[in-house]
Image (cartoon, rainbow, N blue to C red):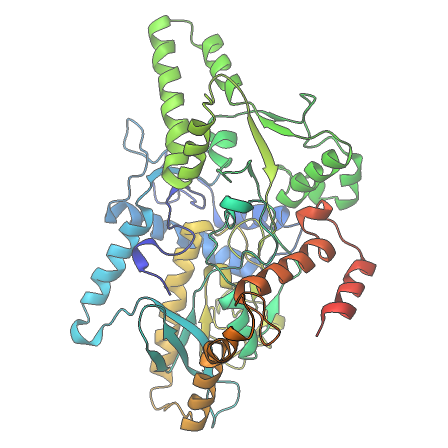
Amino acid sequence: KAAVDRSGPVAMGLSAINTYMGLDGKVSQNPRKPDRYTEYVTNDQCGLARQDLVFDVGRHVDSSVKLFDKWGLPLWKDENGNFVKSGEWQVMISGESYKIIVAEAAKAALAELGDKGQLLERVYITHLLKDEKEENRVCGAVGFSVREDKFYVFKANAVVALMGGAVHVFRPRSQGEGFGRSWMPPWLGGSTYALVLQAGGELTQMDVTFVPPRFKDSYGPVGTFFLLFKTPATNAYDEPYVGVYDELKQWAPYADAKPTPTPLRNYEMILAIKEGKDPFWMHTERVAERIKQEVTDPKAQKKELKKYESEAWEDFLDMTIAGATNWAAHNVDPMEKPMELALGDPVFIGSHAASCGAWVCGAEDLMPKEYADAFPEQYNLMTTVKGLFTAGCGVGACAHKFSSGSHVQGRIAAKSAVKYVRDHKDFTPTVSDETINKLKEEVLRPVKLFEENKDYTTSPDVNPKYISPHNFLFRVQKIMGEYVGGWETTLGTSDKMLETDSQQHSQ
């Protein structure tokens, strides 16, 4: 629905590739095997992981990183030409143009098809088409142009739904002139989950939201500071807040895993908030102090401090420019004072440290039989609907894919879809004109309703005949925030709150 050069969560860039094994000989330190990656993801998600899907990402992801390097993405390299790892799985990049570089490669691949290849941008897909002869089978999609007066009908043998996760279901912390600023891009409207569900596909872990701890207000990344710079973080009383609460023992053995699982680390921040021990601080200034203690030669010390300062600012300029402008606007030098951390607003995501999404078929050599029985036909990354594939944030129970893992899943899904098309080469989509016309009427109905009733009130924003998109959004966010565990209730809810929400707002 946007332009491929700057669409999706990678639109603003990234400062690291967060999933990389290093088994291709490109690193000299910390190479990891897919089974260790599977163990790590399973522990981090407290057991909520499809290990067949996770392992499949682990055994293929290095090939995507190799492609990024080939296409010109600037990966940090040491004096021997090896990639620089900042943690167990992370590779540092200068990634402001990450999406543009990958988009250029995609366009080059499409160009090889000549007249048979076509890229349509600015098209909002609203519905998937179900075949009218074959049960539980997708056969295309419909949508409209966001720039022109055009309604599109796509008929297809296979469909791949890659529309990211969902943000703004919960109210963002950024309000007023900053409304809409969130950690995830605001244009991710949950289309992947909605369209798969409406087509009859099974979803999983949709009760699991992800609440990222980030630099306050700008939602800047924390991974580079924790992993590369080894930056300490504390509560308001200069105390550690991770691994200090006995309440976590009830989640053993996952609570004993190293590193502490993401949901438990985040929960400890909530416990600290309830004790009145916020705000939290990322002590960026202590990294500078540590460098001064460790490097005593004045010339070498100055060089190391300059390197730290440069890399700290680049981390933000590569992926969260608002973070750099926020520091500058407040005249803040991260080498002199700590930066405030805060939990963001809950989001639905399938590729970060949480994994809601579709229940999909796994690889033939990895998927357990009890999973295989759920799929009418078995093709890797196909949903429970025939001919409908997904990847990245669309795949549930497979966390910690990040950009590289999502990319490799996209490649796997595309190849599976091609195989599916070849295996079903005699298939002809069957959709009646009546169905198409009904969908077109449904898509255009809000515009018609608005035009017919906008003059009924002095302000078109408040009208008893319809609800505007913005007001609908505000109502959803108010309900979710107050009843379903938004930041307004310190990310907490209860069975009675959920029951009340269901009774009062189900209509």
